[in-house]
Length: 411
Ligand SMILES: Cc1cc2nc3c(=O)[nH]c(=O)nc-3n(C[C@H](O)[C@H](O)[C@H](O)COP(=O)(O)OP(=O)(O)OC[C@H]3O[C@@H](n4cnc5c(N)ncnc54)[C@H](O)[C@@H]3O)c2cc1C
Image: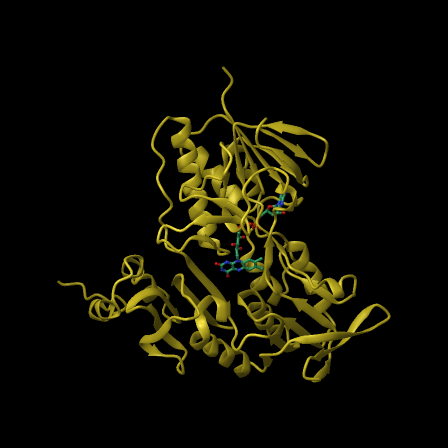
């Protein structure tokens, strides 16, 4: 009998990590990795940080050295998009006309950057998701004097920070009251707003762009809804991403702002799994389905799916996903981090340090219990809160434990 065949669609972080984990777990059957981009799997965080701010040639920051792919014994198909999935007959149609059969299929297609349709085709307007986008923004920034970033989430804030480093004048616009609001709440967002102001970024919060001034097909100015106008050479739209699932709409796979998967990473059709930014996974802490767009979560869910896929092949019991979400973001010289899933309605209580000093840990509390801990400038201390956040301990218990205080090693 032929060995089972696993096909992974999406050759980004989650797709590659799934392949690596399958091989490390002992899977020696056929394994295909299909990626729409022409590049070997690469890392995205540097695209809004060092690669955007620096002067090095923009090359994909590979997640695995090119000469180490042979070890994975992959049927690697790059530069080819998967077009259609038949989950009943277990086939996958690729854009080059090939059809692959599979026993298990892992969907790892990530996100597509959201654009503003009305601005499509205007020269000088960009989004950032791929290394090619990064190269295009770098090239547009060369010789530009004034950039406008639309969207002050994690990505938009990092882009503003990197373009400031390049010496551009930067305006940052968002309808929300603070940057990073959706990820870390208003108080910590207010701290990030202070970083932007301290670095000379023009911050327009609670504001939206009404239209762009365009001459000869190129963006020249920005006008806000309140009439404020400025000249700009470059606009970067950072208003989030949409799960790359349009090609799955007729597949019968349940979609729910991404590919709906259970706590094991399994989608609604037998043998189909999803990992990374595209996966809307049942949350082990009872939060319902949660789609997390962070680097660490992509690798964590890939590990879970690889483990469970192997368990199914071996007739063993699968185990649910249990990792606590974690994210970081580099803003200027400050690392902002968050463990857990804070909500906008959480009470935010500073545990140590102060937001004014730029070095702090804060608990995000709901009903007296700690849902998350965020902070800046105290990375190791934040990580020591992991067990307490995972257990959602009462705030008083976290204060008494004070895991952020460095343990004294007894002689
Ligand atoms: C600029 C940037 C900076 C970031 N910085 C941080 C950070 O500081 N901290 C943090 O926690 N997270 C950060 N992230 C998020 C993190 O990089 C993502 O969570 C991670 O890349 C998700 O990996 P993924 O494999 O799910 O998706 P992706 O990395 O997007 O990979 C998906 C791949 O699938 C391909 N694909 C899509 N559709 C198809 C198809 N039909 N057929 C074949 N291939 C397909 C895509 O082309 C893509 O290559 C950042 C993201 C970006 C874009």
